[in-house]
Each structure stands twice: as structure tokens, then as C-alpha cells.
Image 1 (spheres, rainbow, N blue to C red):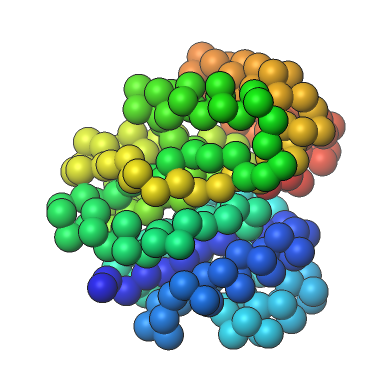
Image 2 (tube, rainbow, N blue to C red):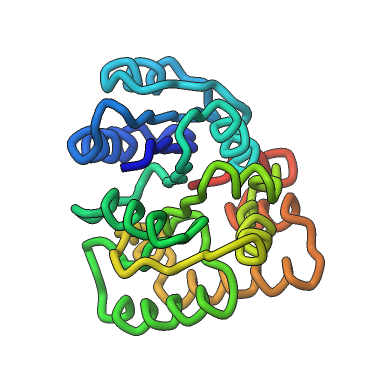
Length: 236
């Protein structure tokens, strides 16, 4: 099995981070490393990482920059990027290992909404799968890369939003970038809070604006409903 480095950006989301760290520690072995890049540089997050015996890196609250810093510090030959609020499939590690052994230089997991689910989730999931194949899978789908691939194509953009877009596009040109059959379970709280169709529509509008050349920094303020002075705080 290749050596994994799991890189997790976080900003004041210790409760969900704790659940993910517990799951990772149960699924992985001691040869793998876990790096939490804390955009709040908080004592609470540092103590949590100490409890789980994982590496804690303080950073500024910009997700793309956090991911780059985590990747620079990582030692594994497979870099696996995870959002703090996801839940993993039981065989996630073996799925990545098999993909790498079959020649993949990167890939992503199948998007699934975690519980509580509404009927809208059953409609949105195949649409998201299609979008990932013709467009770009986003960071909440457990993107992974061979270390050489990641650094050769330049890594994440230092942006607070859409930081994975140039990375995935270049990785697809670099080598075999695949969709895994195993799901990763994405927290549905924002869809529940904002409304399933409202949240989906807002995300698509932001993506279209980004494709048309809008600044990720400006779009981030709309994504999080913050004023420009608050734009560094993007809810993950």
C-alpha cells in the first residue's frame, strides 16, 4: 500500500473534524500521516490534533492556501485532500490504492449526501456525477493525487473558492484522473438550511461567474454572504 498524507483544511469546525479524525485513525495505519491546516490557528483545534496524535499547522483562513501549505509539508506519495465535515466509505483507502496500482495519477470519490437526506438528494446526485465528468469535481469529493503529479502541475490555487479547478484541469492533462465507484458522504446541512434548489442554483451561478472571469475572492464573499472586509472567512 502506498504511503498516504491526508490533508484537511479547517476553520472552527472541531466537532466535525473530530468525527473525521476518529474515522481516519480507525481506517488507516501508523505509516500514514494526517495533517490538519487550521485557518483559525486555534488552541482548541491544536489540542484536538494533539489528542488524535496528528499534525497541526496554523495558517490564514484561505482554503486554497491552507491546502498548498499542507501539501508542502506532506511526506506521503499519495496526497488525499479532505474537507473536515465529510464521512468516508469503509474501503476508501483500498479504492485509492487500487486506482494508483492501475496507473491513476489522481481522482475523486462519488458524491453522496449524508443523512439527513431529502428526496431532492436522489435527483441531484446523478446530476453532480455528470457535472464532474464533463466539468470539475470539487474539493468535498476527496480529491487525491500522486505527489509527483500534484507538484508538477502546480497544486491548488491560493484562492478561497474554486481553488481546485486549475489543479484538476492540469491533472487530467498530466495523466489518468479517474472517478472512483466508492462514495464520500457530504454533509447536507447547507442544503437543508438554505433549501435544496436555492443552494444548488446559487452554486451554479457562482461557477458560471467564475468561468466568465469573475475573481474567486469576490465570489467568495457571495458564497458566504460576507462583506468584502469579512471575505477571508469562508465556511467550509
